[in-house]
Image (cartoon, rainbow, N blue to C red; front, side):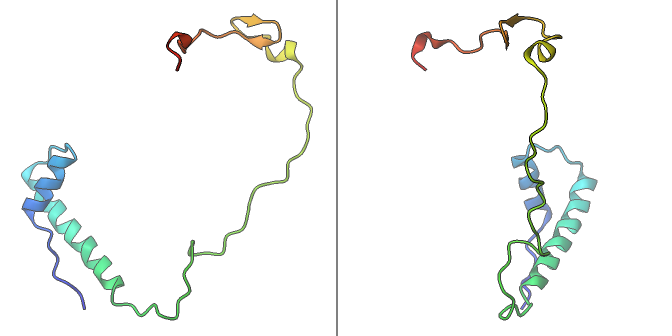
Length: 104
């Protein structure tokens, strides 16, 4: 049994206000119709008999699509650091961003 849609202009204005959206009167009217239609479609889903439908996490069968890890050669430290603005030994040198004086 489908329920009556409760989407009206005052609700759209309220949600727009909460969302900090400045909608014109024309946009409010259009959104009221569009949101009412969306809620109507969702209400139709409630009418379906899903008793024999098993719960699923995805509509399609999904399998792991990750590739196997492969060891490949990487850059040596000098090559990796060749364009670094600053370096300290075999490391990138970056500005300090945490103040450790307050115990955090």
